Each structure stands twice: as C-alpha cells, then as structure tokens.
Length: 226
Length: 204
Image (tube, rainbow over all chains, first blue to last red; front, side, top):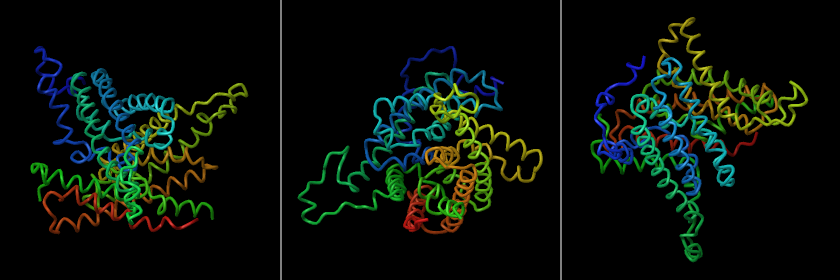
C-alpha cells in the first residue's frame, strides 16, 4: 500500500538537502503567482468571496487558513504511510477538522468580534478545497518538511488574493481601510458616494474575475487553450 | 404553508451559490457540460437532504447545551457544541462513502455516470455549510431542517445547470485571451448572482 502512495519525490532519499533548498523555496513562491490556489487551481473560492467585505476579517481568515493548511499537511504527511487508501478522505477530514476546532476556539478566545463576523466560514475551512486539495495532491506523496512549506505557500497565495479583494471592496464600498477613513469627509461633501454595489457579494466574483484577467495578461503561460 | 415558504426561501432568496457562494469549487470545475452538471447537482440534492437531517438529530440529542438530558438528568450541564465541526464532517464523509457503496451495488448505471463526482461531494462546502446554517438558525423541527436541506440542494442544482448551459454557449464566442475560461466564468457567475439579488426583496 505505502509503495503505491509514495511516488516520485521520495526516490531522492539518502541525499540530505538543506531546509531552504531552491526546490523548497519554489514550493513557497509558486503558489503566489504561477500556481495560485484561487486564480489558477480554482480551490477555496467559497470563503474567499464571502469574507472579503472588510480587510480585518479577511486577514484573520487568511492567517487561519495558513495555519490549518500548514499543520494539517504536516500531520497527514507524517502519517501518510499508515492511512488505508479507501478511507483516506475521512482520515484527512478528521485531522483538518481537529485543526479547525483549535483555530476556532483560539479566535473565539482572543478576537471574539472577528470570529462572530466570520460566522460559519471558520468551520468551512474544513471543506476549503485548498486544504483538501493540497493534502491529496502533495502531502500524501511527500515528506513532512516540504509538505509543511507547501501548506504555508498555498495558504499565503490564498491570503494574498483575499487581502487584495477585500482592499478593493472596503476602499470603494465604505471608503475605509482596516476601519480607518481613507477617503476624506470633504470628498463626500463635494458629492462623492460610497459604491453600495461593491459591498454586495456578487461584486466579489467580478473583482476576482478581473484579477484573473490582469494576472493572465501579464503571465501569458496561464492563458487557457481554445 | 410554512414549509413551502421555507423551501422557496432556500431555493431562491438564500441560494447556496448566489447568496453564500458555497460549493463554489466544484461549481466552477464541473460546469463545463450540462450533462455532468445535472449528475453532480442530483448527487448534491441527495446528499444534502440525507446529511442535514442526520446532523440535526446529532445536534438536538448529543451536541447542544443540555441535550444529553434524555440519558440522565446529571448530564444537563454538558455542552458539546465545540465538537460539532468534527461530528458533522465525519457524518457527511461517512454518508458520502455509504451512498457511494449503495449506488455502486444497486444502480451501476447511475454510479457510472456519477462515479467521479460522488466522493468529491464530501468536500463540497455546500453540504457542511447546510449543516452549519441549520445549526446557526436553530430550526425547530426535523421537518423544517429537511425542507431547508432539500431546498438548498435544489437551489444549487438550478445554479449549476444554468451556468453550464451558459458556458456551453460561451465557448463559441470571441473573448479576450486572458479572460478565456476561468475569468469569464467568474464574471458570468457574478452577473447571475446580481440577477438573483432581485429575489432578496421578497418577504416570506
């Protein structure tokens, strides 16, 4: 069983590589652009759209996802050789759910307001496809340390998009960033209005669509074939 | 009558996709053709309307504060609600696995057409989202929870079938290269969601 799961990357055992070898650095940097979880792999969209009305909850959400992805990748990667193949999804979900419960309790204890704003979406990190996707695609076939880095990288790649979207939405929707007023009062007196549409959930989709458009026109190799 | 209202609310006003963006990943990934969209939509309806009532019973008789009094009055002070994530997801994952086995045994034709999508449903956020909304909104009876779950499933089904139909047409249009595929799908979904917002004013 274990021989089936552990594929190519383990062949280069024996050779000891430094903790931040070029290969491991790629694991960290790639998800920021070339294999961004949201805009390229299409993973974890649900929560990305729902929590991005304000910057503060989205930063908290991004941190929560980084922690959960990194540590569940680590744990799954450690026990990958003893998980029976048929029930691996249940095992993975249990590990992820345990991590999410920890994060949820932590948020409730220290930033209660934000945890109320995020409501069910903290719980939905369990089924956030980024976590599951990385477990299936990477942690099940790689050693713990690269899996941990891969988890952090993908969490950050997700967080970057989250922060960009929430920045756009908060700036145009309520004229503030992190709760501080950016667009001055005098602008409102001269007839400036907050754009109410940007606050509505559908605009999040359109903002992400435009981010994808910009990213792909800069990075030609991501363009989909006809 | 209340149940009908709840159903309509779950399908249109609080549509899983357009109001809450739940189950988005498989929604975007498996909406390339109408045929596969219908298959996945049916499977989601089924799993939602089985899993949420079971989660409701778990919530009512095990997890809620003071829910264990039916065992003995001594347990009245126990509150297990922090375990709900792990209980719900374990329930959903095992139901999905069970459904997969049952369908494989008794309806091989259906299994062949759904095959790959069935296991994916375990990680579809709309199922866990349905269970968590059920918990948050505190539905009073098992009937209400079931109707809500079925309605959410139908709403999800409608949304994915509509998007896949649009995508089949869009494939032949002339779209700027960087926007092709994923980008335009996001924007289409956004526009559909704006259209669905017109249901929001309806009070039931």
